[in-house]
Length: 302
Ligand SMILES: C[S@@+](CC[C@H](N)C(=O)[O-])C[C@H]1O[C@@H](n2cnc3c(N)ncnc32)[C@H](O)[C@@H]1O
Image 1 (cartoon, rainbow, N blue to C red):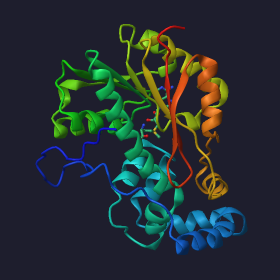
Image 2: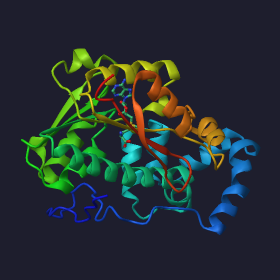
Image 3: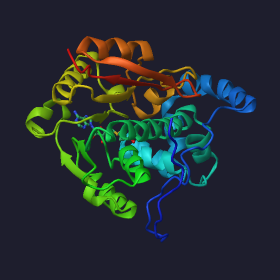
Image 4: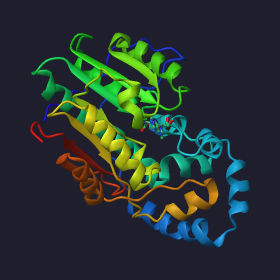
């Protein structure tokens, strides 16, 4: 597997968007002390303390992540705060940003998926120009980071970043400018389930579907995957993931923030991908055990 580790040269100023220096950071796990803390605090958060008390307590924090999660649970902005991992403002922020298993797992997912995208772009590149599609992309951090590490020209790689909501696009465009890849990136507002109408002439080699399917039920997911399978080139790859709850964090996310995920194992994701016509080529679970990351291919001959 090819690894690229050097961050592109960027001017560092106070408005610069955070970029990872190195994509080979050790993935996050939980120390024994953190595991014990988690198992002690969890029953209180999940069942014992009234949700209204917990909400009042968490709203008293200076935490940017908690404020954003109350505003829009699971938003792209909340993901960006998690990825950036600034020094915490206070103890509650520390818990949310650093100690919380799903925060750790999301950073692991970012690093793992970005490396998978780099490898796939390199693999597809030998056959000609590579077209990527980021679905539910927000600002497109995974795709943009991967492209920037490969230093390919706009003739060699182009990414279409699609989201229902256009509120991440200005930030995403700033990120592209900072990375020097603006001419490789297009943003598009639209529903990915209607991809044939939204982007009729684009046939992607690589589709990235991260941070979205956990909000869809099986029928919605099936509809989305079918639409994507239809537009992809034969031999094209799709990267997505399931979500599990080995740290029993789901009850508190639901009662405090109203945030609910559709749980799916790697095997569940494999089955639904196969139903639509993909073949699974790779399945890896990040070390927190929350996100199984699954890569499928649209077979060259159906
Ligand atoms: C949690 S954000 C994930 C952002 C980014 N992919 C990440 O993982 O950091 C999920 C995004 O999916 C978008 N979304 C939800 N349903 C969609 C659909 N049917 N088509 C396109 N985008 C969708 C939302 O607007 C939101 O920006």
